[in-house]
Amino acid sequence: MSAGQDLGSFVAGLLETIKSESLEWQKKHNDDLNKLKRDKDLADVKLRHEIEELQTRFEEHKVRVQIEEQHKTKQFSEFLQSIDETKSKILEQFPSMSKPIALMIHHHATELLKQAWHSPDTRDKLISQNKFTQLMLTITEELIEGNRQKSLPERTLKLISMD
Image (cartoon, rainbow, N blue to C red):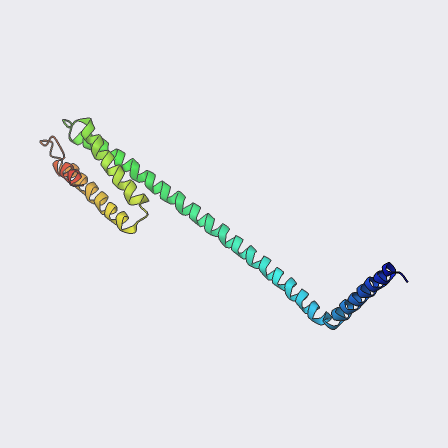
């Protein structure tokens, strides 16, 4: 025999041995392999179920957040509209006051509202809410007093100048 044939026989024998041992190993561990396959299939089903649950929760949370944001946007718009109405009342109540001063009061109230509404820091938000509330209360008190002898809402302007 030649060296090529010997090498070929050796490789063929080696492959046959490997196939045989592989087959024996598979037979010996067949139950374990089947259990692993079942466990993997079960884990896949469980994982798909958990992903579906998370998707459902996410979608429900998303809908809740959208509803809350729509409600907040509506409230914010109502606040802005009421600030506009207050500006008109200030101009009526204090006819000798220049429009830029009324616009400055309006602007100040609007900025305080924005800070109170949009501040990510809770402490800053509360401070701005308190300032906004105090400003609106002061304006309301001066409008209720109805004293046309005053040319300016002095307490309101004083309050704004302190900020």
